[in-house]
Length: 263
Length: 329
Image (cartoon, rainbow over all chains, first blue to last red; front, side, top):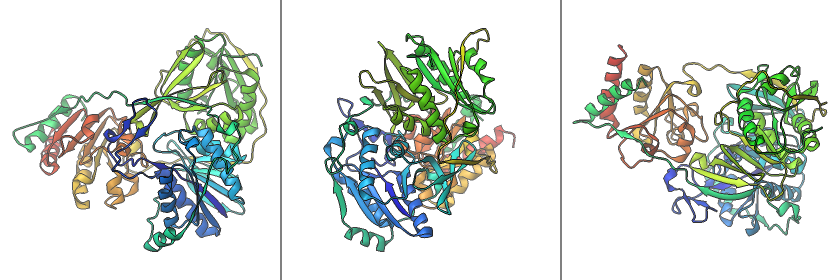
């Protein structure tokens, strides 16, 4: 089974939210420059899903990202987990692209990679939280699509997948080729092994520009206009409970919560 | 046919009724439609859903497009996208809305491509000026907001609406409206197999009234027992930050946050948790957050209603004793 996994580089969500800054004209959000950006967590789950399918079925795993040059790091991360090939679409024209433009670029790149049975994405990116690229890409490629999955089983040329819903799941049978988006409930991604890191270091990442992909004018026109990012006003209204000793503060906290009928 | 302009909603049915999230979309949809020349329409798909048309009218719809057909008896986005694409192309609404639910997040982006328009995800605020819609949505796990609009002349202006954000529409049984019967587009390639509810043992994180949660500030895996003990005393569920799940101190099922569970208890007690955006994304919806942390400047205090600064080793036992005493245990 030949699988393409789409991955995105995002600011590390482990950093405190107060690290996040919006630039003066509200166009960009940046994290602490000293904290390395990471692979989007859900995309890492998708890489794990691809690796398990390959272990069961054989085949090839290609990692694809649209992003800046630094996105090579997250492709390398996926390669060091065990994926086979890396592809990056690097183009300044895509630096502020909407989900439609990203999906169009990914779709053209997948066409160029060729011979794909399954496309996997994370359920959403932890920076823009849109969750749109997966299902949009499915339409661009004309594939059936099921999103936010916790399980995938290959059976006789099709897949049985389980989608998360509140308090349970729904199961679907999806023919191949298809596009699926993966949620963290799928399971923890594996850590790269030393051998994996060494192998990944030697691998070349194929780079394409928008022109290489032959993206037409329709694919380069945003369908949603960004107006601005802003940090919502969050009034700190914390009431610090203190005491002569920390033990006393602990007791006073219990009394205070009782007073508020919280316990 | 008919409609033209106004607002079209793609409704959802849950347990034979209009879903609560859809009643909320009807609430905001009515408000937006009142500022536009066109009507408020809703499409309802499923088997035996015709009876809900009058309900939708009572909740504010002017036009109800009923698709009562075996092809849409169970949800698959293939069939739903195809059918709603046809309705939307026929009636040409100015604004298209659906709830950001399991169905909505899969149908929305696909439908947007078919209608050659952009879709804004998970919106919490709308404003309408001269027919031009602007929407605001949370991103970066809720730490940042993004405001978006649609290019001049784009139609429909398409958005999914975050559940539990807008008030449900008021029910007025005397309202009049039009019911239109629509045939379904044949089902697509994906086949629905089954749907299951899964009861879990103990207090489930997502349903818990009280959650006691621990983070790296606990120092080591052994100390997590104190979190569990306190949870027992409070009849609470137990949560954890990603940091200590990654360390292997506790199972993944405990993880609260972006790549874990999203919770909204009445009371969330965070012990030794610094307040990384990834964690707060999962618990910021709690009614009251209590933070116990050594570091006064920790981000978690920005979200907390009550805080105690200091070593949890000293605070927690005294807190727990007092709680036990108050609960008469």
